[in-house]
Structures are given as structure tokens and as C-alpha cells.
Image (cartoon, rainbow, N blue to C red; front, side):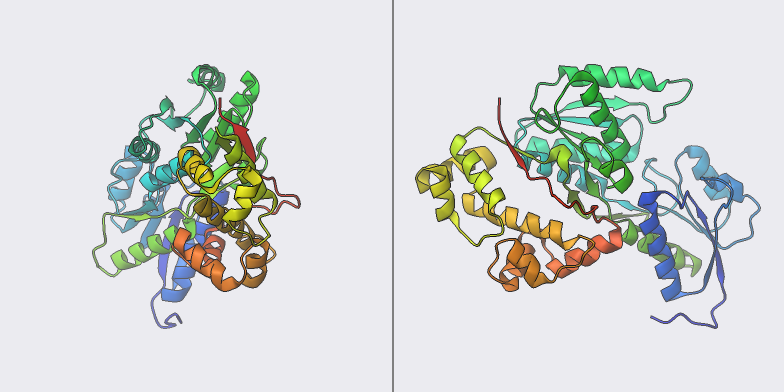
Length: 408
């Protein structure tokens, strides 16, 4: 869409730290919208990492996209007397229109992922008095409750400074982890808190992912890839949040009304070593799973799994249902689709026919059918969405294979 060269330029302030990795796709979304729909001139703070909205008092612009984290921020936004949109999820009510991550769904995705890993016990590490943390934890706990399970919860202060030394939180985290019987799947409110969980596991001698599986949120590549082990994380669609935030501000500038809050669904789970495990309590199921992982590129069906498990079809069906809650056929299909998702987001863009062959599909058509069944979108649409969201995992020359661990 071509912008109108005769439209008056709108001066827009970006009152948030534009240099943070997970906000870069958000900035791309904002600027792409601006280029397509109008003429916007942007103001950011060139001297510091942050640009508090309070610093815009007296600024003669037209609108602001801001991080609003505190009641003081909300008051400052109101006092500006111009349209303001936020994407931050810290406050229950920021007082301005908001476009943000669908945080309850983030929690549900984390629960589904850890359930699929086979963990029998669960925990949530969140933050006191922070809405996004509350909503993510609530989604996590509700999903577990639907399956008859519960979780231990540990909440910490949302800021750690001189008044609250970092070591105090480390000691509390160590004590909490020490009370959890393994194997246990843990979900943290964000990647940095998940990284703290991994560090705590090292300090108290808990093995990841055998004893403890860990999942964070935001898919910050620096945090995730350089954690030990690399951290699984839920990728959020920051690009689309940027586009929708810009669209909301544009509507306000035109005198239109917008929704008080718009939620954007996360992209999905990016699995790395911290949760790359499958815990089962049946040796035949474990042998079938290992066969799938070792021969995923070969076109085979359930008959091959029956041979690998050295059991009858009926016995394998019942064992899979008890251990994983699905049939051997559904498990095989799910693993092929999961492998396709991994290949689709690699930097070297593979043709769909090559992706299909590498995942054991007879052709690209079969890949598309099953991919849409499990993911709700085509493989091409999934790749595009991941690219826009900046959610591609770093390519590893030797991908880690899922470890099968016997439940204790």
C-alpha cells in the first residue's frame, strides 16, 4: 500500500527502550505500518536505554507508543493530552488503549508443552503484583487443572535492587526448588526468570532436563541460546503487536475509538535442550519413541513402531494412551510436524518438498494436510509468521535429540 505524499506528517514518540532484542520486531511492525499508512516522524531517546513517558512533558508531538509500567506512568500519559497506546502488560489498567500478548494463552501453551514432555509434577515461577505474570500463571494453572493436575507456585519481587539484594532471591529460589520432587516441569514468567531457574538447578545439583524441565517466555535468543543448557521459550508475536499498536494510535489520531485492550496470540513454543525430554513409564513406549526420533526422515507407519516395541498393536495403543494420552499414530504425526516446524524456521530457507522429505512425508501435500491439522496454518504461513515475529531459533549444526527418561 502506497503512502499518501500529501498527508501531513505525524510526530510520534516511541517511549520505550527500542534496543532490547525482543522489542526489535515490535519496532519493525510499527515502522512498517507507518510506511504503509501515512507519514510519521519518530522521536526516541538517543542518550539512554530508556525513555520514560514523564520525559515527554511539554513535547509538541501528536501521539505516543509507550511502556506504561507504574501508576505514575499512567498519570503522565493522561497528562500529555494526546493519544497514547501501550503494549506493556505490567498494570491491570494502564488507563490508555493497550495491545499486548495473550498472556493466559502463553500459560496454556507452556502447560501443554510440559504435559507433552510427560512431566508428572509442575511448578510456576512468577512475579508479585505484575499483571502479565499473574495472567501467564493463571493460564498455566487452569490448563493443568483441566487435566487433574496442580502446580507449586513461587512468586518473587518484580524488581531486585539495593533494598532487595539479588542473593536473597537466589536463596529463596534454591529452597523452593529443593522442595520439588522430580521429575518436574517448571514454567517461568519470562526468559530472565527462567534463566535464574537454570542457574539455581546448577547450584543445588538438579539435572536439566532429566530432573527439571524449564520453559520461559519471549524467546530472547541471547538469553535462550547462551543459557546452560539452552532454554526453551514461548515466542510472542511482537511484530504483529507493533503493527496493531500503530494501527490503534493511527485510529486515535483520526478521532476514532479503539478497543480498550487487544490481545495477540503467541507464535508457539521454541523447544531447546532445557525441556527436550520425554518422560515415560513403559519400556515399549520408550523403544517406540526412540525409533521415531532416530528414523524420523523415513516414511513408515505404526507397524514399524510395533516391531520396535516388540509388542502387539493393542498393547502399544493402550500403553501410549496411558503414558502420553494419544495413539502411536498421532504421536508419530505430531513428531513429524514438530520436525517440520524446526526446519521451516532455519536461516537457510528449505523448499517445502525438502522439508517434507526430511520429516518422513511422502510429498509436500501430505505435509501441508497434517501441518494444518496440528497447527491450524499452512507450513508457508507458519514460516512467514515466525520470520515476522523474529522467532527463529539459532541454527545448530548438530540438533539435540529428545531424551527419553524413565519416570520415577
